[in-house]
View (spheres, rainbow, N blue to C red):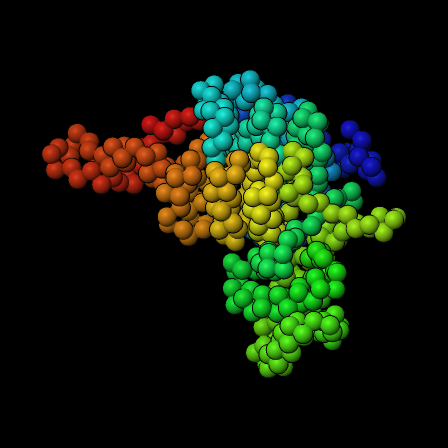
Length: 505
């Protein structure tokens, strides 16, 4: 393994007893509970090793070294850290005083070679009949929700479905990865190469990131798309800013600055830019009149506060990290170049957004909403099949749920398919607060692939989801209840349910 700028031999030497399991390709996870309690997972089985650190300070030094190499800091004042090894392995560490019994460390490794269906069946990730069900979902273009705890294989399962649809149906692939996992990117690049289509990376941390133009169309369409990221959480500012944006966007279109990039549009909405916006409308009486009305409104304290507040919230969406991605690349000939999602779908491209929800939670949620809004519009225009993968969607679901549900519906009507990956099968309803979501998912022909669901509340939700009312309503009708059984169900009985990879019994 060669990583630019990193001496790999020295790097692993500084991790002490962790070097051996980390360099063992059979090991998928390393767990450290104190200085002399090191466990590994190999092919789904956890075993204690005879390895250990000489003292607690050595373990803390190793954790701080891992964090420091990727620009993160961890100590007693900030005792929790989520980061990565230089090879992309996912790291979670907790120090004292949060870790009462001493520092703990978990390192989730990723396979160097993609798993095949036969491997996943052998590991117990899914059964042969379970993959048969997923194959039927692919052919029927059914939306799919894949759920399970960390390490259960949900992302791997979802990527197999994505590959099947991309290669069999020549479907465009749109993937939003909230964690920024290197293995997911490698798998998607492999799919693009196998299908002979472009691979597009939209990543604020990648030097070679493609540029993205998420707003296009008429003035009304651009304005609606631009305020979408703050609409769910800041409805007042969204509505107020939308009025002013319409005037500014009209002026930009009139002057030939169309379509604008999102950073340029937001900058043009700064109140200090208003005189320049007025100059653009000199020869248009209607626009000039609207500018005059906007100036009168902005001169009031409420108007000024509303517009300034809305602009600030849109700036947060971009942040310093996303601003370069959302601005076009200027070629040596002066041409402005950025990815149009409708065009990408038509070319059957594989497009990957990486949002880093752990480090930039607010930006990740807002960018996800913006991407989903762009997809919704692009799917209506592009005449080509597409598959959307929302990986680790639970981290942004509270903000982006409405847009995701719209994409489920869009998929049914416009040659698409949506695959949602989340920790719990109950997340879609619990995190969105939409109690009618169960019926909506069912009506949109959604299939579920469930891995290891233990919470009683989740199993209760699954019982209802299965549509087997006899199963759900008669859980209390045991021998001891006789003819007096009500058939309303109970949590006690739900605890006894067993959820397999392709059955609920």
